Image 1 (cartoon, rainbow, N blue to C red):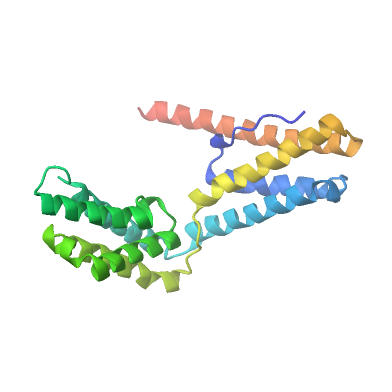
Image 2: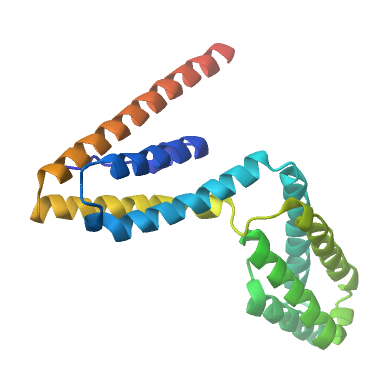
Length: 236
């Protein structure tokens, strides 16, 4: 029987190492790979994406610049959106209508653009700025939001200016992590069903090895958390 895995306990690097060991354990087992080929391939693909994102964010010298520029454009986007929301129902009729029009443009492209990954966020913000300038300049002028839209456009251009040198990966660690976890869980569900309906010695041996692997990781993490807690208590 497969042990339950609480992936929320894994820090980013530990999840990377665990996934690597997990895949190696499966590949080194005597289980016929055709049995799990589809799930293993999916897992390896998601692991590769996670690994690339992790290495990009921890090793890329431009990552700090990316994060700083991205935070600036996040703030610019939220300020512009919030300004358009402000008093949209408690202003003059013409200004209320202008605000609703601009909010609808934002909603059409990406209402929560600040939560998107680098690439889709760039696309959304570029489209918002372009759409408003091309089609809704009257509404923009009516609520005196030209300067805020300019700030958003400049923040986007500043971010784009460091992207070529930074070789930005399209997804971040935060975006690839749940995909990797889902792939591991799918793999575990599949072999659990195999164990239940078509048990083999090879499958049981693999499950034993994976349980031992997870127990070793959780034991180490538990020990680390206890030590960390004691250090924090000593410093308090």
